[in-house]
Image 1 (tube, rainbow, N blue to C red):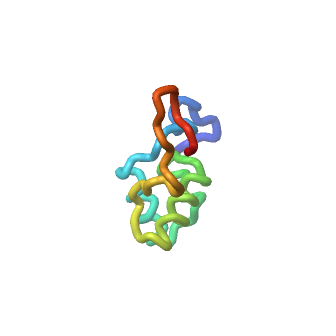
Image 2: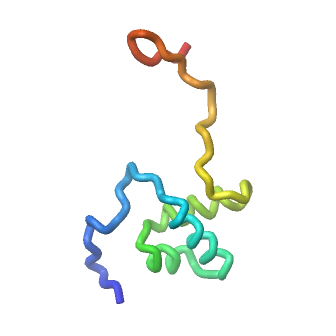
Image 3: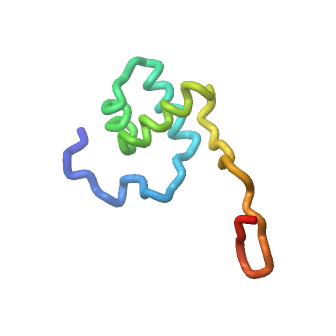
Amino acid sequence: MQTASTNIGERMGRSQELSDSKRGPVIGGHLGNKSIRDISWLLNIPRSTVSGIITKWKPLGTTATQPPSGRPRHMTGRGVSAC
C-alpha cells in the first residue's frame, strides 16, 4: 500500500514527457470506469497529467504526441527568429 509520504524522486518531473507505455494504462483505466484520482494513484503520476491525457484522447482517439501548432520558426545564423 502506498503512503502519503511519496518519495519526490519517484514522481515525474515537470519537463519529462510521459512514455507511451504509461499513456496506454491511463486510457485503459478510463475505459474501465476508474476515476482520475484512482488512475493517478495506481500509476503514480499527477492527476493533472491523467486528466490531460484523457482530454486529448477523447477528440483525437490517440495518445501520440502531436506536433506543435503554429508557424514554424525560421533559423538564422545568429539564432531563432520569428520571421
